Image 1: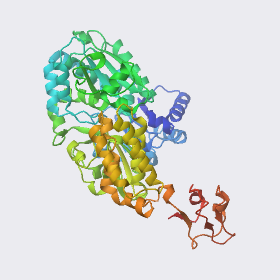
Image 2 (image 1 turned 90 degrees about the horizontal axis):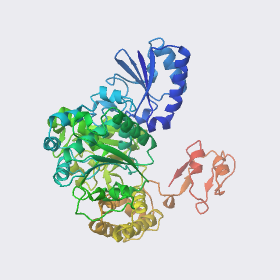
Image 3 (image 1 turned 90 degrees about the vertical axis):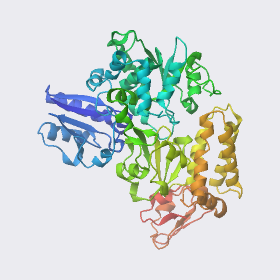
Image 4 (image 1 turned 120 degrees about the vertical axis):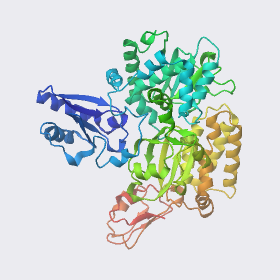
Length: 589
């Protein structure tokens, strides 16, 4: 049997996977054979090479990248029919060799172990890859206390951002009295540039259900909620199918696997409020209230959903659980460094060659991820910084690229690990604008409950906006620092307390750029429109008139075959002249 496996995660569909799937189906129908099988799978992480198609024949697999319907036909005719691989389209063979092997060789896949390998809609395939064996083991061989001890000894920390010990968190919920408890999976992934949870939910939904049930057994809960943002329709669709199939096969519901343990799971679709990633705001949203944080204590482990003891972990945390149960605490704890054990999934975005998902052992350096795994910076530009932790994180400069992926070491830089978003920046990125972008996001997403977050972030945003427009004042940097520190110490919830991080870290490491904007009225990255002038290089300009013809405000003058001139007063800095010039004669000053 020959198998054609097509990646139809959101990234694959965005690249045209649906059309490639349709093409293969048409070709298969024409061939009139029952020896070829077509199936779908989730994202394997190589988003930069989508559409990805794997061919599996007699235990050997070939992975093709950037597949189009036209390439699909050639692969079908040459490889499937004639057993002759199309080498120019290949990216990996058996996931062990190939032109993109560098992307895989430093990765260790625990959370992503099934993503891109199984059909997420097939419970049988999940079971064939040791699915639900961890649940069976804990129900038939372990006590709740043993489960909590095992998770604690593994060193697993919550992958949602704060990095609190998962075992300790479960222990608090287990020890809280009460006949009714809840397990909540936080799938409200809201950081710009982050897509780790989405890919796991789409590619391996049963692992989340299994992790939640293990937690439910450990803490004494029989009800679970998955709080997933409505902007993830495919993830929700796959979760619903997984829940339905698990119920039909007795893995979910009453008296699971013939034991006294029962567990039900419901999906709550979030409306996209960033603040609902905070535990207490998420709880309020599930209860039908406005998603706003509340003071703690009491913590959710004591008084959570509907006032009952509740344990909340994110998608990545739960996905680790079945592997830890089956393989033991030590193999997981043996990976990593210091108090950061196991692996971490990162969504790589920005100015990096290989964008996508990577899962690497804790302790690997930032430089190793960017250059060894992800192939370095696009267009051979200079690595400038990496934004980690999303709007709650901060910018880590290139000179700290040897920093190891470790909660404590990352925190020392002023950033945070966060849920795993990593946006790579090059020399063309303005750090002042980057700070403004993230602060604008958090300011818009503020729930408004506390004054320091509601008004403090607004005042900071106004200052940053003014600086990027060339209207900065001498004391603006001091004002931003003072406001940031006050918000950090007075905001009600963790999201408000970390909102100033992107600004404070950029001031810490790129103060010279702030000063250039304020004192010199220049943007060193030539990015801020209010501080950039477009000029024509008279030596390069041949007078073709293209720039003048395309200028929307007639700011460019000149005769045919003679150098042109841009009127900087009239110029609206749209950049059209740069894009239409065939001689690179127009540049930013």
